[in-house]
Image 1: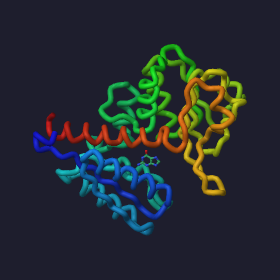
Image 2: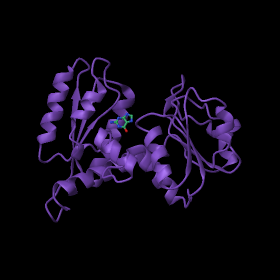
Image 3: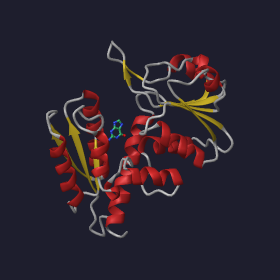
Image 4: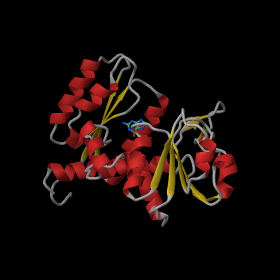
Length: 259
Ligand code: GUN
């Protein structure tokens, strides 16, 4: 791309001072720098109005050297997330949160990969795990992880179950999983009682304990001995999310330059 004079560019917008978001944004900028993607950070105060944020997004939509726009979530309560995400042009929506891109993922014909689920699919593929016909259980139904995760597993011909806060017999359902994906947001809630012997366990959680220790949704120490493969927190899924973001930014830059 350099030889063709194309330099991929990513704009990252962060509103307010959520400490976890700050860490995520710094990690994203760092990987951009490591691999030669231009990154621009727009750090806005928590009092920013929705209209001000929308105006920034519209400006970036038109900016030629920016190929990807990422608005770090969550946004302050007075800003409507959906309105903001829908304002990013789908061609620059490297998080794949715009309804057009979400719809494309549903159909299986997509340009941008959903970042965390696609990172997980890469971990699974690189580990030589075949998903065809496997029982995959996804705990969590968020638009960012749970729902697109289920869709990508389905595209690989897995049998997929989505569980959530109203699911009955959660333990029993999790115990049927050949591949268990925990994306709940509750520290260490998945203990060995939820896991079948030899299962693959993917931990999407990022929770801080009172003693500041960063842990996942899986109780790693009790679960790990029973698995054939498991991802740690930190260092498992998190970095893969950013890898996918980088891929999407490169894809966007190529498309914008007819490459
Ligand atoms: N907040 C938590 N995860 C994500 C993500 O993947 N993208 C954005 N933009 N915000 C997030």
